Image (cartoon, rainbow, N blue to C red; front, side, top):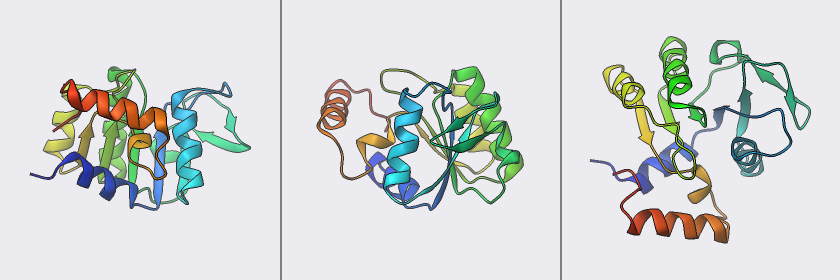
Length: 154
């Protein structure tokens, strides 16, 4: 079985990533992850069913609206919305899904099962900012705490 560090590394090695759950407000965890992945050289697409922009880039209402192939999708949504995002990922042929779980929780057991049934590599928990170098001190601490309390996915 592949461990979390290796799965995170493989996910972050992808060039084009969609972020479901980006907010119209200037702040928010999904927005911070969007900006971090942009800084690390990724092509990133913000997914939000409501019209809006982030840093001058448009939101896409769903994964099928994105104008190019996406290598992975990260969800920072409610578990129910994560299930819909996974349905979209299946339809779009997206091979990787990462469901956020740290302070908030996007993980849905049903969505994880749908990923497994459709050959999608899934990370059910944690946050990319715990792994995308350089990792800030706060995310190092959160990763450590989640590790010692058994809350990191296996």
